[in-house]
Image 1: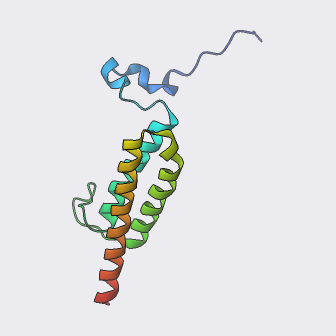
Image 2: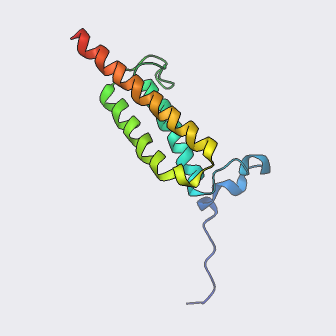
Image 3: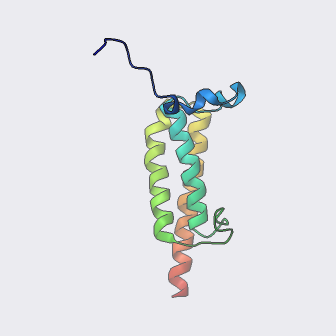
Length: 115
């Protein structure tokens, strides 16, 4: 047995194989990952409300339970990040979350009226 440090697995850090301009676009801080997740979940919420086309299925997919989960996740993640981002970004997150919640409420109301 040797005391040599183990080399990191080549596949463990896939960003090293990316060109420099793409490496700089890869999030490296938790705040960046959280903002990415918020962005992804926001789009998913719009899709599950039936207000955007599902990008995978290429059709409208309405599932209000899934939409609520996505909206709630955006709210929880936003609360974590507000104090870590600049004022303008925090305000944009608040506005986006308010729009999601308002539209979710409208979709629920619309569904209840139609049943």
